[in-house]
Length: 424
Ligand code: AMP
Ligand code: MG
Image (cartoon, rainbow, N blue to C red; front, top):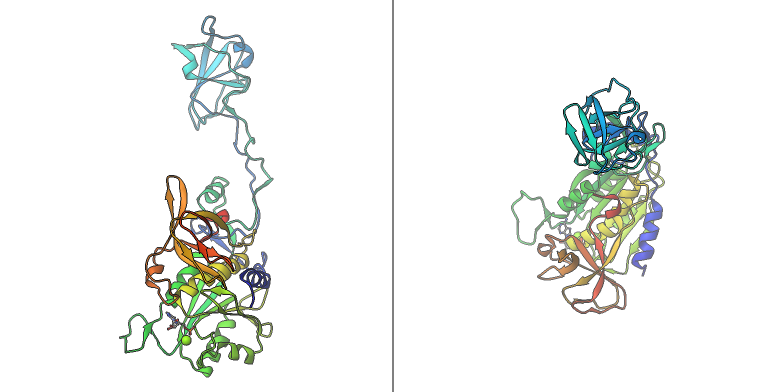
C-alpha cells in the first residue's frame, strides 16, 4: 500500500497554483486579511519619506558639537521648534540648533540629533553635554525602503503586518488570488442534517460542518452540496455537479470496500483518473484521489478539478484533511512556498501506541509548559469513530511505520493544524 509520504507527493504534484493573471480579484485593503497577494507591490514612496528624528532632542550640526562634554558643553542657539508633521523653514547655520521631536523632519543643515537627556536648556539656548556620533538618531530618507523597488512579493498571505505596509504605501485596493472553490458533500444513508430528528441507526452529518470550517480556515470558499444517499445515480449527479463548479471536491464516506461504497466505481464511470485508492495510515486508509481532465469547468482554473474521497469517520476526515487536502488548497490558492505541512519534534506527556503497521496519527493538543511545547494526547477513546474527543485538537502526533511505542517524556513528530511559516 502507498506510504503517506508517497501519497502526499503524488497529491501535491497534481495541483497547479491559480493563474496570477486570470484567477485574481481586486479587494479593498480592509477586506484583504488572509488573502494571498497575486502581484508584487512596489511603492512610489521612500521609507522614511524624509530624514526624520528618532528621538526627542535637538537637531544639530555634528561639526559644532564633535568636542562637546559635560565639562565643556557646547552652547547653541535654538532657532526653530519642529514638532512631528511640521515642515522646517530654516537652514541651521554654525552655532545653531533646532528643538525636534520623534518623527519630525530634520532641518536643512542639521545632520545629527542629540537626545534631550544629554542637553540642558536655557531659554533660547541649549547646552550639548555629550559628543554624539555623526548621524546619530537620524532616520535617513529611503533607508528602510527605496521607492520603485519591490515592497511585497506575490504569493504571500496578507495579515496585519503586510496590511499595515500596504496602507502606509497608500494602496487602498490590492489584487489577490480569488478564493479556491471547494465543493463538499457527505455520503451515507445513515446521515441526517443537524435539525432533523434522529431515528434509530441514524447519525448527524458532522463532516459537512467540519470540512466547511477547515476549508474556510484555509482561505477557500466552501460550496455545500449536502447529504447524498448511498445511491449510484444520486452520487453520480452530485459528483458531476461538483466537478463543474469547483477547483477541489471533497466527499466524505463511501470510499471503503463496503457494499454501499460506490464512489470509486462512479469516478471510474465518469472517466476520472484515479491516482490513489488507499494509503498506509491510521486513521484514513481508504482515501480516493482523482482528477478529471475530461470536464470543462466554467470557473477559470489552470487545471482539472481534484477529487478527494475521504473516509467517513470524523477523525479520519480531520487527519486526511490536514495531511493531504490543506497543502493542496494552499498551493492552489497561490501561496508561493506551496504550503507543505510542517512537522516539529516535541516531548509527549503521554504514552503513545500504534500497531506499527501503518503510519499512525494520534490527536491531541500542544501545551506550552515553561516555555516548551509538550504534546498531550486527547483523553477518551481513540477509535476513529469517536469525534467527541477531537474537540480542542490542535496537533497530531505521528508514529511512523514500525514504531509501536513512544514512552511518556520521549519526543514525537507533530503535525500542526496550520503551516506556521506563512500563517499568523
Ligand atoms: P464510510 O466511510 O461511509 O464507511 O463511513 C465510516 C464511518 O463514518 C461510519 O461509521 C459512518 O457512520 C461515519 N460517517 C460517515 N459519514 C459521516 C458524516 N458525514 N458525518 C459523521 N460521520 C460520518
Ligand atoms: Mg458510508
